[in-house]
Amino acid sequence: MLIDFVPTVGGVSLAEAPAFKKAPGGAPANVAVGIARLGGSSAFIGKVGEDEFGYMLADILKENNVNSSGMRFDPGARTALAFVTLSADGEREFMFFRNPSADMLLRESELDIDLIKQARVFHYGSISLIEEPCRSTHMTAMEVAKKSGCILSYDPNLRLPLWPSEHAARAGIMSIWNQADVIKVSEEEISFLTGGDDPYDDNVVMKKLFHPELKLLLVTEGPEGCRYYTKNFKGRVPGVKVKAVDTTGAGDAFVGGLLKSLASDVNLYKDEKRLKEALRFANACGALTVTEKGAIPALPTKEAVLQALTEVTA
Image (tube, rainbow, N blue to C red; front, top):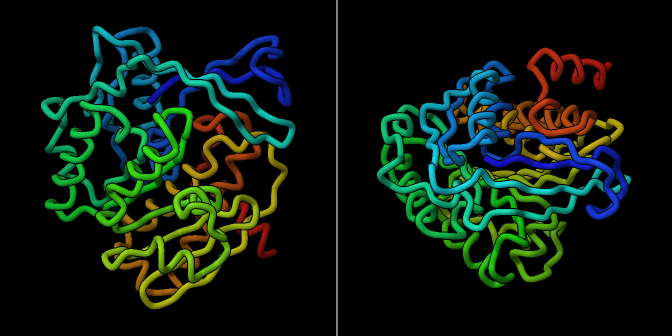
C-alpha cells in the first residue's frame, strides 16, 4: 500500500502541477476495498511505515471494512509514495519514492499464516517480487495459500519504473506465472511479456500465456471490455460506456468484481454463461470507477453496479 499524490488539475506534467492531493493507493489494497464495497469479505497483508501515512492507510482499510490484521508497521522505513500525472484522457504516469519503503521489507516471520488459510481466493501482484525480503515472503504466502486450497489470482500490474530493467521485469513477472489459477493482464502487458507480439491474436495469448494449470486468463481492453480464455472456450464481453475522468483503479475494480463472484462460485470458469455474467458485472465495476477521481473513493457498491447494468440493458 502507498500514498498517491495526484495533481489537482489534469493534463499537466509533475513539474507544472500547481498542487497535489493525497490518495491511498496500491493495487491489492484497491482490490480488497473493491470486494468489501461490493459486500464481500476481504483482508489485506502488507507493510507500511510506522508514520502518519502508514496509520492513515490502515485506518482507510478499517473504514472500508477490510480486515487489516495482517498489516505490519516498520519503525525504520517510510510508507511508499508515488506522484501520479493525469493526462487529458485520464491516463497516468508514475514517479515513485521507495528507497527502500516499508512495503519492500515485509518478512516471512511477519506473515499472518492463519489469515491466509481462511481465504477462498489469494490475490497478488508482481511489485512484491522486485526486492528481498518481500519476494521470499510473497513466495511463502503463495505456497501457504495453494496448500490451503485457495484459488491463486494474479494481476502482474506492470510498473516498469520500479524494476531494474525491462528484462528483470519480464523475468520476474513470468517467474510465478505457472502457479496462478486466474490471471488478469492488459493489452499493453501482453505486448510487453511476449516481446512485442499482437495482443489481439488469440494464438499468441494461448501459446505464450496460457499454461496447463490455468483455469481462467482475462485480457482487459479498457472501455472495450475484456476477453476470456479457459481450456474449453474463449470469447469477449463488451464494456460499459462511460465518460472517463481518471482511470486509476479501473483494473483493480474489475478484479474485485470478478473475485467477489468467484469466491461465491468457485467453478464459475467452467460455465461460459455464468462466467460472462460475472465478467459483465466486473466490467461495470471498472467502468464506474473511472467516472470519479482516485481509486478507493471511486470503487462502486453492488447496488450502483446492478443499476448501471440495468441501464445498459434497458
